[in-house]
Length: 55
Image (tube, rainbow, N blue to C red; front, side, top):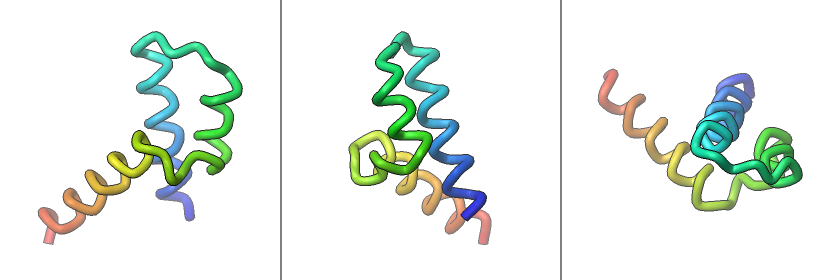
């Protein structure tokens, strides 16, 4: 599950960069408790798209 951990970290870091400073929310993303949320769903969909394009 290393890839999902990388995606979680990338999403949380991107949100921080954009000014989100809700530490609990960001920790939840990093620890996998927000995988059903719109940020993670979008990131996972994008990851899937990149995998398909690489074929």
